[in-house]
Image (cartoon, rainbow, N blue to C red):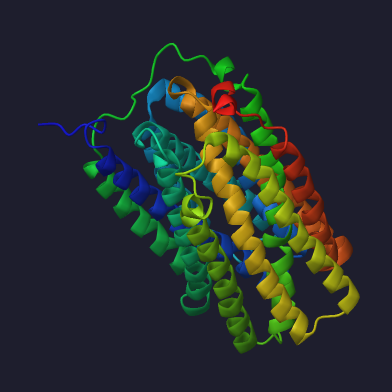
Length: 423
């Protein structure tokens, strides 16, 4: 007898989550491998940012079209395509030759990272859309399921950061990339064999023009998402890793190894904390006892709380004038606080996009929303390299504060459904 996802939603949810976990472990590890490996080869902050630009551009394009692709061909098709493309991207990256000129290396890695960006957003859109269709209706079931998926994904990605730094220090670049490709290929096959039947297989009449949302709340939430993730990546992608490397490494091989492990550990702890708070967000916000209207109001309040952290850190870095042990400790603690508050904001957004959309266009609205998410990461990535090169960590953190303020303004434009407002 065939197992149907609609009859066993938890089994389908577990299979989707397992596939997403496997992908995000390699995604986090690959990000750290590329960043640290090319920094040791002498790449400037702007050149490092370039390595990830096509990754984010690919995410913008992919999410805009992936919702239509999933609506047309089915959710499992886009999920498996994302995992398969990531395996190919890892295998391609292993072909990188250290003797190539810097320009050639940058172009090659940008192309491979672009493919990886397509892969990630195919997998993400598929997983998040599946939750809307599988989650129990009523109370806070949707919020709990999406928070669990998103929170656990980020904890796994955090482990990926640590794994990438450790693999680079212990095994080197090429063996690490090949090992990740092999493991992900095995997991892809296992998930494909165990995935329950019954997730939407697509509808032939899906039109690409349906991707652009006419829902006011979806559009304003997408704007808030652009600014929120831009605010994170403006310091996260280049600024903080390179700042910590400058503080921690003396330039020797042993010094580099210590710096790699320390930076990888910090990035991993930050992402794991972020994921843990995301998973706990429904309890922190008492979502079971409060309606959608109250949670919409929370989106603006938590964004305003987040604004305070980068603004204060930027002021401290400016006043310090130069790196110092007390400043490094303060930055670590401050950015962990940023991560916790950011996680509540992100979890609220992830719930609200699914609450605002309808079942018949969930993949399109989720794709549009994650297109905004990718646009924010793209903006943050470009600004991270440029702002660090122009104004150091002070400008990175100051830019983050401005972007959080814009996110709070966008969240303030959200409106409850009339039925919720009346309640």
